[in-house]
Amino acid sequence: MSEMVKVAVDAMGGDNAPLEIVKGAVEAANANSKVKVCLVGAEDIIKRELEKYTYKKEQVEIVNATEVIETAEPPVMAIRKKKDSSIVRALQLVKSGECDAYVSAGSTGATLVGGQVIVGRLKGVERPPLAPLIPTDKGVALLIDCGANVDARPSHLVQFAKMGSVYMENVMKVKNPRVAIVNIGAEEDKGNALVKETFPLLKECSDINFIGSIEARDIPFGYADVIVCEAFVGNVILKLYEGVGGALIKKVKAGMMTSLRSKAGAFLVKPALKETLKVFDLEQYGGAPLLGLKGLVVKTHGSSKAIEIKNSVLQCVTFKEQKINDKIKEKITLEEE
Image 1 (cartoon, rainbow, N blue to C red):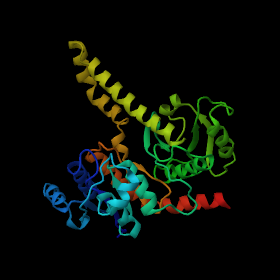
Image 2: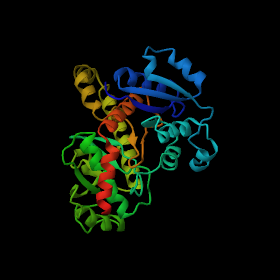
Image 3: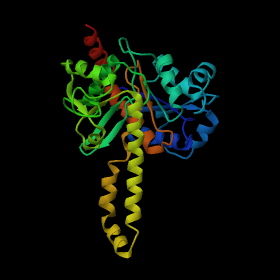
């Protein structure tokens, strides 16, 4: 029998905690017999939520935590002072090796700080990037970094490219993933100082498939598999992606309700349209891993529903089975030699 993958889930983090968090965690355990979920948070509240569901008792555990880190709290101070918070307790389970991974819809800042301070970075990793999957016309691409390092250096971006390649090749099964750096033009001499300095360094990397620059408008068409940028640019891309997607879906729905004829047409195309739009639903891809740590840390949207929590937990199984951390260490070690 294959080894269980233990995932510490912050049951108290996010807009829809604990209801959707517990539901998603249970659904993940029911979907995969290799998963064991440790729900971290107020024990009595979690117990009440679990009473709603049927699941194998050996796959779901409660770890009591008496405090909650709120989104607006200063991350460093919160991690330092709230030692019995659901975030800190869950991250400690990963640090100690009791759990293989951590999933939270709670405070992004606390997760980023806690991931580095509590779990710790892999040897040789300068900065761990936050890397969500985003939908494209050809599948998905990894946006790296989208929120962890707003003042990155060229050497950081080179490591992002290497870690992103490892993730896409082994977790998403994309052979020889195409790596591109976000720029304001295709020419090598375009861009700000960071991009201009990083571009030649990426060209020299023989262990990644660097294809050059990519403009933001080309990202949705799937011209690259790993989209490299610092966190300020990445976060703007991600938020614009989400906003435009939501606005387009709203407009399509409104347009279909303008007349009797359009309503009839909408009824006919609804199944196909629903399936098509599903591709651009970010929830189905799970959360964003913070790559380069000694254990897997996954941050999901603050508004996550059960489906995103479920998929985030399930992606942890692939991460462990493919030994992503070992492969990242190997890439970074080769880089240092």
